[in-house]
Amino acid sequence: MSSSVTDSAFEASIAEHVTLAPFTTLGIGGPARYFAEATSTTDLLNGIEWARQRDLPLFVLGGGSNVVVSDEGFRGLVLRVQLRGIETRADGDRVIVEARAGEDWDSLVSFCVNKGLAGIECLSGIPGLVGATPVQNVGAYGQEISETVVSVEAVDLTTKNLVAISGEACGFAYRSSRFKAADRGRFVVTKVSYRLAPNGRASVRYPELKACLKNNGRENTDAASIKEVRAAVLAIRKRKAMVIDPSDPDSRSVGSFFVNPVTTRETLERVRSVDTTLPGIPNFPAGEEMVKLSAAWLIEQAGMRRGYVRGGVGISKKHTLAIINLGTGTAREVLALAEEMKSRVRDKFGIELVPEPVFVGF
Ligand SMILES: Cc1cc2nc3c(=O)[nH]c(=O)nc-3n(C[C@H](O)[C@H](O)[C@H](O)COP(=O)(O)OP(=O)(O)OC[C@H]3O[C@@H](n4cnc5c(N)ncnc54)[C@H](O)[C@@H]3O)c2cc1C
Image (cartoon, helix red, strand yellow):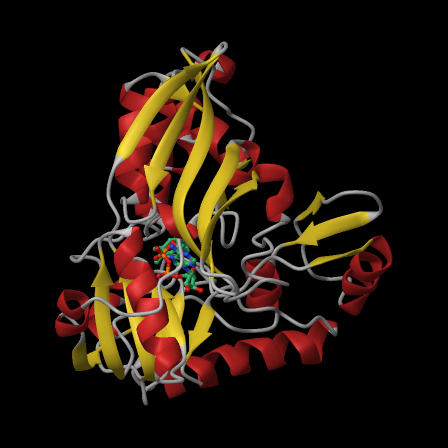
């Protein structure tokens, strides 16, 4: 599977000094020194080899919905993954859906929901492409892709071989995986296989989702169809500007900028004792002795509110965790606002917020 000479047609397709802002949902970012689209595994291998021969760093871009690109841009080759194709096959009482990395994630969810395949319906409306879903184990409304991923096909940059990594070997954790942690930058995902349930029951675990379904007249939420769940999730997300909508300036973001901190119960007690006049901090069990705290609550109680503006960026009017580009924002301003949010929370609660997006070119 490895190649040592780059294809001349691919080489001819490499563009120079391409501004990255339009390729990101935040709409921020300077130029890529070199930029190419990969529509096949061969293109990917050509790009990898081309960058290696010139000793240039490589960045693999999907839908750009979880990246903050520096104002100076990226000095190497940006490879935008555009591999397309979806296949389904029976697997006992389940169906395996294999999607290539460049497929739009929400279109895949819609495709599966329309075929009656359950398992990813709560992940409706998440922007970006299939190839990035294992990277941070995308999750929402009580579901994570770790529950359905059976295998990830990827090019291993250390050997340039195409490898299959089982779901168990992906090292999935809350908003993380080996692709975002220990093996960051090592693999380019080419295909992801999900194991879904035909005519399966919808997953309705999240209180806000239950409330929305009840509001829609579905008293017994366990009986909701996956189509109803998809519609409810999309409606909730739209209210929070958590679907990309060019007409909604609050959606010009990377989604949540910080992950919810997972801490010990002792830390939870310490947070509670900081100010006993505060309303109770929302917290959720997160494995043995650990709890997940609400980053949005911490930010709000530290005195930062929705609609806050700092230069060309601000906090969404609909979601405390979303840093938005007001139109003239720069990456420098995004980092300054993120630091202000972090330091307020650190000073008040002694908790270090961890950013969710990937930083490129800093
Ligand atoms: C409005 C909004 C709402 C969001 N809501 C959620 C949510 O509810 N839950 C959630 O988990 N996330 C959410 N996100 C974050 C984001 O959509 C997801 O993380 C998504 O999976 C990123 O996909 P992408 O293709 O845009 O990746 P990119 O932003 O292009 O890349 C993200 C990272 O993945 C890497 N990557 C991308 N493709 C590949 C590949 N083929 N192989 C190897 N590495 C790759 C990149 O190098 C980078 O490190 C939201 C974002 C926005 C803007």
